[in-house]
Amino acid sequence: MSDQLPNQQIPETTALGTVVATSDGSLTLSHHEHGECYHTRAGALAEAHHLYVVASGFQELLAQDARQPVSVLDVGLGLGYTAIVTLEAWEQAPAPGPLVLVSLEINGDLVPPMAAAEAPWQENWPELRKSFCRALVRLSDKTWEARLLHPRSGAEAIWQIHIGDAAAEPIPPSPILGGYTHVWQDPFSPGKNPPMWQASWFVRLRSAVTPDCQMVTYSVAVPVREALDASNWSWEKIPATMPGKRKRHWLRAQPQTLTC
Ligand SMILES: C[S@@+](CC[C@H](N)C(=O)[O-])C[C@H]1O[C@@H](n2cnc3c(N)ncnc32)[C@H](O)[C@@H]1O
Image 1 (tube, rainbow, N blue to C red):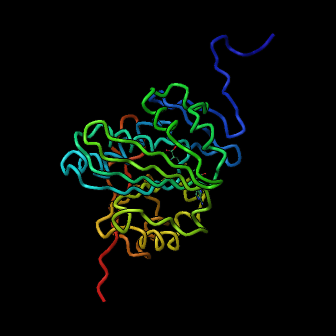
Image 2 (image 1 turned 90 degrees about the vertical axis):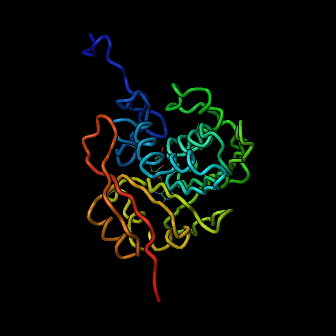
Image 3 (image 1 turned 90 degrees about the horizontal axis):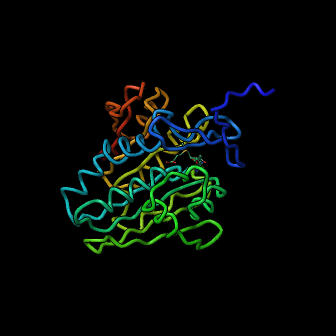
């Protein structure tokens, strides 16, 4: 006789990791090597929305400053949640201007199932989110691109995915505005992925952004704050305003103005 309970769900394990349901119903993966989840168990989709789209001021900017171009660097595409909520916020804005969204990802295996909208974590995604992914076209071994038109303003969103090691390779320059206006800093944790949280990374990031850039991240760890201090970013802890999250703070940062 099996000791398994009748209603117990067997977690689906794939080559990319084990599927884990988070508290808002959205699905994430635990990484097959180090076991860390791609998202908080308090809600993969909820954190992507509340932290990256709302707490960054991105959603408000789109609502208030119609036609303003925006350029977002999404550090760690992962399962696509931060990218998708960015596109969704733009799509839902009344009359936005152009959007460039550049996602960096070291693991190229994540993209083909996601672009086909057949990845295990996309099972319960609504059709709009899947349609953003299906718009992705593979341009080369290392680049994917989707172009979307806004249903009301007619503005264009360009979503590029660059496969490679962001800690070692140049950051792709923003195709507009001379730099990124927003950065979603979302690699695995500083303990599991130190190079993506060190001052050397934040120095390079600083040179890729606009002077008024808003960077947001989930980590407020002391070494992260020290690395930001050492690389001329101003930072502040902000309340982690999302239901069910035990963590109290997230972090928002801006490049410091340097005087000669
Ligand atoms: C926490 S997950 C990101 C979750 C993602 N933003 C989402 O919404 O689904 C971190 C991602 O960063 C990627 N990553 C880690 N180190 C990287 C590097 N050096 N260069 C590019 N991507 C990296 C990982 O492969 C992983 O997919």
